[in-house]
Image 1 (tube, helix red, strand yellow):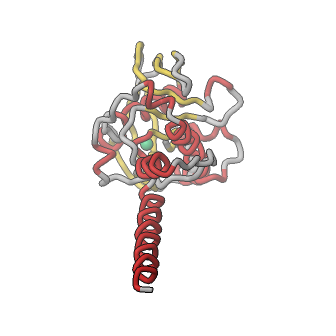
Image 2 (cartoon, helix red, strand yellow):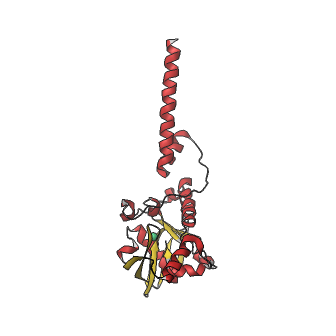
Length: 233
Ligand code: NI
């Protein structure tokens, strides 16, 4: 009888500890979920979910993100990260999102201007680099990690960005206008740089034009091309 009671007791303690560990692992996200899946041979369903966007002041936003290895890119959970980043960007809503903004210090970003041009996304670039930067334009920018604020800054007028797609194939995209600025904004995130480091006149939206622009990035846009005056990425 004592042996049975002991066995039941041990089982209950094991179940309790197991539940706690599983709960914690679900809470802390990507890395822990992978170790849990590996340890328990669980297949995780590839359902994209919205991740928390971290804000200025979080240390991950200030670190230089690490290059993505090919074997890492092939990991189903890394593919899920990409899907989650799109989901998170659309939900925000925004037109670009870099991995450090969801607290993952890896070199990749997603962009989708959500306009009529196929070349403006949906696009994911892994280990991106600029092979060409030229010209200069001044614009208003915002950032999902610095909510509610905008600022004036200069960007290159035209960039050519190279890197890998989600399957590890080489990609090259040319960006001008808002698309080019978005690529530059996201690239900065991978180097621990926020637009507020470069911008002048950082401010909450005051003028009617600025307020209208912010309303649009908050999801009330009538015409997608009107994202152009305050890109939130
Ligand atoms: Ni940003």
